View 1 (tube, rainbow, N blue to C red):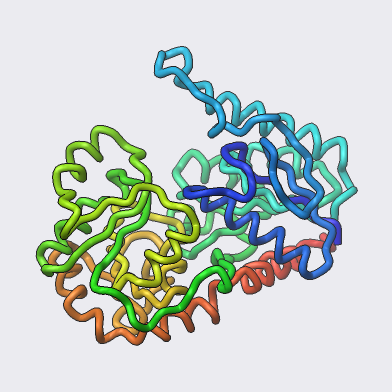
View 2 (tube, rainbow, N blue to C red):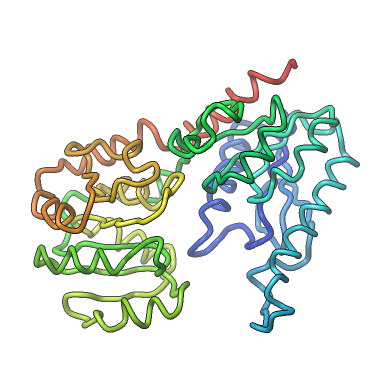
Length: 351
């Protein structure tokens, strides 16, 4: 089949560090190419891909610098909407040239009015939480052709949005090394922000008397300088910043456990399955899709607060690390993910 994949304009492929949506799109493209589909990528910057590449904008948003002045504050949003406008023009000009288009843009619902008029189907994958205004906009369409990435992500919409299916995110297992003999530390990986609450990971580790390694960018100030920096002592709490892929994989596989005290309804949580692929069990707060990914007490723990997290740290050796890897093998690979996307397409292709 001829398939188009649209990514947001924030970063190129391959992505480094943050960029979960882009990593998912990259995995989708590579898996489709393995299955001999003809794939076209719509993106910004200089994407390195084996797919046909259509450059919508010369630079990504992450390649640009913006002043903090009020006038510049909305510039990334305006670039993003301009990008979507150009994508819409491309789709209108190339209607019928693709069997299906997989749309991963975070503002991708803006193309739904156009999609209703095109001959080729456009399937939008929602990677972010749904809030009332988005639900209201999408629910105008009887068949919006949308995929959720967890069942929890759908909850705010109730039955107001007609989803095609839920398709869990995946990963390339060959990129993650399984290790059943970890070192004596726990880890946190993610943006250093209030929604991820790494300061609570520090509190739980301190209560349990274990060492903690923090990995991730300083995305939120003054949160980092006030809540994280004073607690870093390079002995019990280490901060590595953002790390390259090789170091990232090493930190995952050598950790005894992954602490994830999130404070928001995370639609999926790619780092959770990356940790599990390495054999490292996750102890997560009960928000978002955590209870869909983790089987509490079997391949990790789902907890309600810092005290329960500290208690679970003390029980981490009860988890068979091979079951963490097995869960990912069975449910969260790129192969399983692409099967889900194509099955969703099969349900609409003749309509």
